[in-house]
Length: 178
Image (cartoon, rainbow, N blue to C red):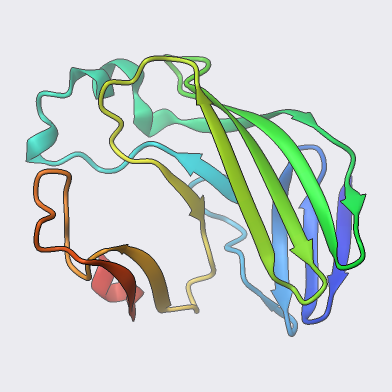
């Protein structure tokens, strides 16, 4: 079933069966993309598109990171505090070749003002020598085109090409990041 959390600016809908936030509405406007390429909600991802420097990482082909999927394996009852709802779930990240790459405990804290805090704690199950990336995916509707992020630089940077990149907060348009 679904659990609907009413917040100051709108509502957050959580799907208990899959352990995911499936809708976030602010002032009547849906923030989440309801038909994303990946699963809806917050999803752990190890995959990124490979490039020339990656040609010797046979591990990518062995694990088939591009087929990753996250599955809910356990969920604690939703708790309520004075100003927030807390959801604690445990997931497993797998691919079609490896049934358990890692386990993750994700805690969603939904505050009354509409802010959502997402805390992720992972434990790897398989020794991965070179992880292409580690990230948390959250796909928003296309109408949102401004991005603000904390990371290494406002240009492309790689593990062996990052000396030019300064750690900081950057802003841009989505179209400029592709």
